[in-house]
Image (cartoon, rainbow, N blue to C red; front, side, top):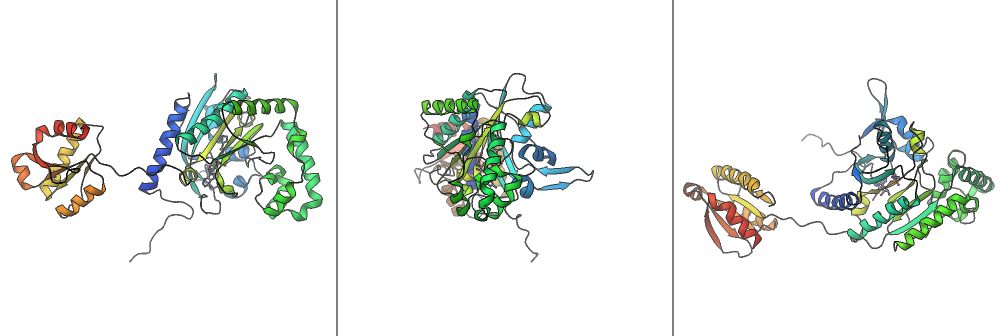
Length: 421
Ligand code: HAM
């Protein structure tokens, strides 16, 4: 036997059961956002690597360690997208989409070369929303409230919301200086990653999950002590709006997020557990990004959620059961061909029905077993005898012994009536 070729490490197949849950989640996402004025945008998987360096930041973990990038034959350095916000901002600039304002949603696969573990893949699925051109705090509340509505629709009750504000640029600069000055004399208590970030990206130290670093951070100065008056006012307004919307949340001064483009409000929804993988949805305001990518100054806010992480939450809805309205069962090659012909016609005539043709053949008994497994409502049975008489035998699977012969030309009306009743 030839050696097996397996899937790439951390890159998984989504098998039919899981794909059915993904599809259900995505349908709710689309419905929830489309009904609130958001429009779909489809973004490429491949981008110039520089897009992510400029937006997420050269010192971020994603750019430093996690990007799948390569040089193509022309010498361009390309990357598989690690997230969608940068691509969305690029597309908005490239196609001048913000004449007034735009609310967008997207979904797809994303790639990060992280250490694979439960809830962390190298290829994963995100659903994201991005709003460009609206400076008002109300849009921040809208994005957060819509995610809360989505959890409700998906039956998720235990998710916790944390919010914070990173203030304006001056706030972040002053705070970073103070944080570094405070941490440096205590650097022997920092984990290796945080030690490295002391010079390259000090704000990210607040994101550490290392117990020793976390203990130290509990005593460190917080960003709230440096907050500018306008950011403080906007944050208070946001808290008020979220409370009015009936949302329960915690203000967490350690919440900073790992991508450099954030400015102002940031938020995160997480499930049980403390690890980084407990985060299911995250986002915030990123007013400087469009300008940083060569566009006009444009306020922006958005968030993204990981479909794998949501699908693994304990109270997510059950995968939908297999279901077929009509299950064709055929004995012999010509009956199989005839089943396909009738099924094609039925699909045209009754487009709302689930119609399955058993293509495995084998015995009548094993086909009936598969019809049962597919939760079929009606079994439509064909053999040489039926073909000769231009009829099918229809069995109501809920009344196991009842079977009637139906002429080909009456099949559509018979089925339509039987399935509704
Ligand atoms: P992020 O926090 O990097 O933000 O990712 C958002 C979500 O994607 C996470 O909360 C998680 O559910 C999922 N996720 C991230 N990495 C992985 C992974 N390796 N395996 C499985 N799931 C993962 C962003 O991507 C920002 N673009 C969010 C945003 C949109 N901010 C503003 N607009």
